[in-house]
Amino acid sequence: MKKKLFLIVSMCLVLMFGLSACGETDPTTVDYNGHSYEELKSVAQNTIGTLMSLSEEEKAAYLSSGQELTANLITRWDEACEGIGSFIGWNELTVTKSGKTLTVEQEVQFEERPVIVSFIYNYNKMELEDVNINPVQSLGEKMSNAGMNTIMGIGTVFVILIVICLIIYAFRLIPYFMNRNKKEQVEVVKSSPVVEQIAARETQQDDLELVAVIAAAVAAATGQTTDDFVVRSIKRR
Image (cartoon, rainbow, N blue to C red; front, side, top):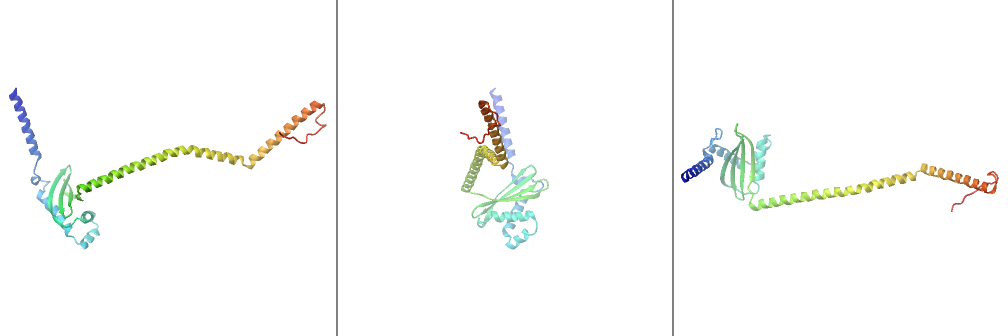
């Protein structure tokens, strides 16, 4: 039983070491759709060397040529290499394949900081699709940027919360404005001349009815008819 267990463990170890050895393939010996590692390295370094050697007149000519990829490459290079000092040498070059995309990254060392130039190819056609140029940030710069992003995110959240609170508070004022408009409409109706005329007519009609009632009561009490006297005024108390 112990011998079988030992054999099983040994086979597992052999398989693990074999798989790890297969996974650590030397990129310099891989064939990249008909192109070698050295060819990709030569193209990357020659392109970067050409960018570093361009004069201002040549850059202006390329920018006005209408070639979008070349113009973007020169613009990105100038933005990335601003204030980083002189060229020192070539650092590591890495080649990564992911699906139909092949990425060649060449790190270039300058006095102030390294710059990574990434050439992105269509692996099936081996045609250059894009070039990204990014300065390598120090740990302090990364922490500073992360802190600024955090502050901006928290600030944005607080601003949105304040706006939501103001909107919720505004809902409480809606009934007040609606009641105020209703009161103004009622006051306008009350102050209308037509309404005043109708109210005067109703008051006059009420007075006539009151006179008739009083006259009938006096006539009944005195035994006379309403034609024998006239009610001239009524005073309300």
